[in-house]
Length: 218
Image (cartoon, rainbow, N blue to C red; front, side, top):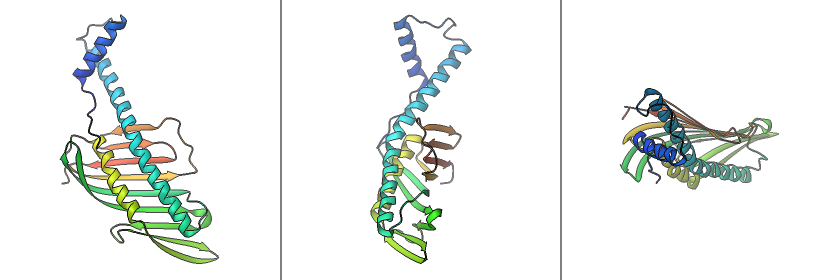
């Protein structure tokens, strides 16, 4: 479990001061001034954001690969040519057991579809824990039901790692994650990470994830 904390202000001030002295570029303004403090805060914010993005990247990659494997499985089972869009909503109640372990009870809703081929799949773990139901209108309606317990189990294992990176200081909370994959959208060369209040957005264009924290619910 990834439990590394972002840098604190005092630690980074020491690192930055040491580096500036080493290269002979001491700030012209007094180190105790408001301007200096503001500059340091901006640097810390940018570094922490970069660190979060870097640490999230591998976990998001694992999640994307898992969803792509699920797409491939459904296509093979149903004979559909392509799944163009998918949406996933994960509602979780989480409890931090230790610095390295977090337990989440999660409910997952998922939609896979291709409007051109009139194809859609629906998964709701509250209704059917490990089955995805698909419908394909190809001259006549065809219905499919497939067991995907291994995929669901893997999603439930991977998603707490992302929560732990974003909210390492929390011990008990409720959280909602919205994920979308859209093949018609252009892929962004550099993923964008934005954190605003109780929500965090990780955006790669084709892949989009929003994590919304509900404080004080539990």
